[in-house]
Length: 122
Image (cartoon, rainbow, N blue to C red; front, side, top):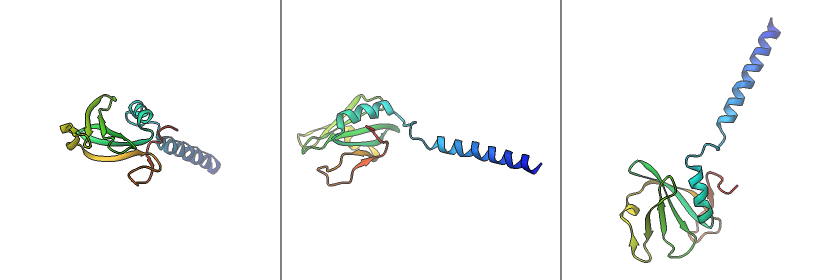
């Protein structure tokens, strides 16, 4: 009977560990299609994930002086432009909250470390 109990415990632990390992995968990225689209445009720049009126939005800009940034909704539709260098700044630019850089190219003009939270482009 103890061999039976041992086998059941091993099976239970194997199933449990499999569930834990599978739940750690990052394949379930919210708005993955939009992020892939933004990465193709801004792979030599920076992408931030922000909130606007409780909704997830993305602010993205190129790694270039006076390039400004563009705000996109969760579907990848442009909803604002923030070009401070050239004077065109939509009101949404100052209403974003909780912004977190999720992608930043290596050797950037901002002097900040590279970031790739969701392994974009890989």
